[in-house]
Image 1 (cartoon, rainbow, N blue to C red):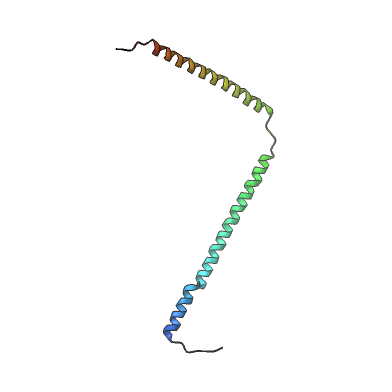
Image 2: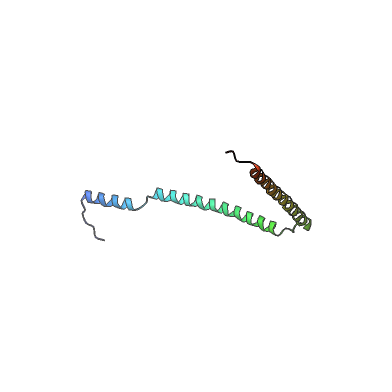
Amino acid sequence: MLRVLVPARLRKVVRSWFDSRYISIADHRQDIRDALWEVQTLRREVTTLQAEVQRLRRAASAPVPAPKADQDTRRLAEETAKALDGVLQNEVLIWQAIDELRGERQPCA
């Protein structure tokens, strides 16, 4: 190894350049602690998500409800359609009556 005398100012500039490019040991340790905390947090989240996936899989494999619910749904849909049809027919009758009243009204001149 060759040793060379270097002026103090130059040595200070070089050391500050190295210090600015490299992280200190304390900062490095803090970064490792932060990364470990993140990993632990992510591990907890993954565990929670795995439990949720298992719960959803169990719910998906649960028995299908009785067909009576399908019959009730169909009956309610048909009743709703009939009621809506009646409402629309009444609306047509109302507009026809309004048109007749407009036609009977004499313009004021």
